[in-house]
Image 1 (cartoon, rainbow, N blue to C red):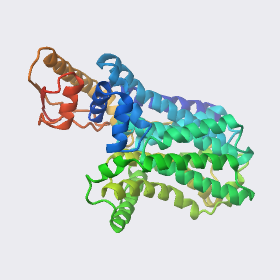
Image 2 (tube, rainbow, N blue to C red):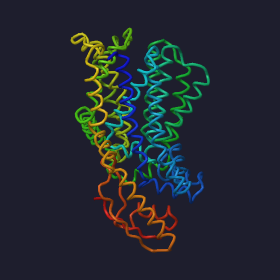
Image 3 (cartoon, rainbow, N blue to C red):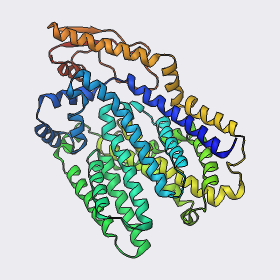
Image 4 (cartoon, rainbow, N blue to C red):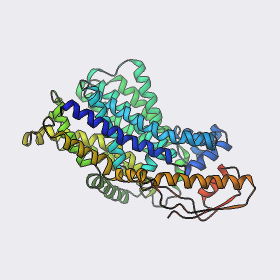
Length: 467
């Protein structure tokens, strides 16, 4: 089997692997904040509600628009169809962003190889993320975190190209500025990363050229302005008041350090990160020509700092503001930015150390073994094993049917004017998704949000537990 045939086989394998994750989106259902924000969006004017969120909860001026005008506000039938399309669109957008980054780093790389590399990035991210529900399949979390993640790849690709040939024409700066505004207005974490990233980029550009890059200065100014808008929101203080353990410097530093070590160790030991890194080394040796000079120049010790630092910053922000790590969606974002820096470190260490000691390349290994190894990695390792099992055993389909029956019963109860509805427990839910279930307590905020969404906020919903 030739190298080209091997690459075609790899492309087919990873496309099939990615198709499973998109297929899983057909069986997801809304939960938690999806209903509360949808109900709020359906019963209040957008500007009025945005102002209330800004005063009383957070400064996320962009993602709040998306959650208050999400698919469910269009009604249950049409909304649910669009709800399930969002994960597919976000996966595709992430793939496109990764592809542009790879093409920016290696403009001479063949298109097929760049596509394979981008697919592996997306698959590794889906494999290693601590909570795929919050990361991709839950609308409220996905548009707040994964959408800015994907857009950040396009911003990164622009600056990688700009490092070699300048910041580009004015219209590209306009597009980058718009992307920075959207990204910064999605979450506090993305705001901080945009601000910090552009400041560091500008400083390094100044040291490299001896002049201040006007385009970078302009985009940094935009990031500063966005940070002021997000940070100055009165709602930040209102929300923080719910967490008495906040703003403890020593506790934040200690807890963030522990969480950083915990998740990096988990990604190294319990996911496909190490096998993918080994495959990347072999692939990198086969396609590089010549080796980019920056890989020889970068200090192999200091290059280990960025992947750790980006995770640490992601742990610090929620821990400082609330006294605890909180939801996994923050860790998902940390993983997303950790991966590019990880593979940069792997490339540097391979060029400076590993390839000197072991020069084997992916030109004449047994291709069948490579395909088998990749197949196992993409279908049977880590979270991907759960995705495969959920689809093949019909567990995801049964969950879809059970949830559909639940919502039909709620709609029937509303239509008949019932005061209370009892829902059967969900047996054997998908293992590849973490679903926050409705409560047995009808006064729970999630139960009340569902009742309000379906048109009767006085309806008492009593849900059996997930078994």
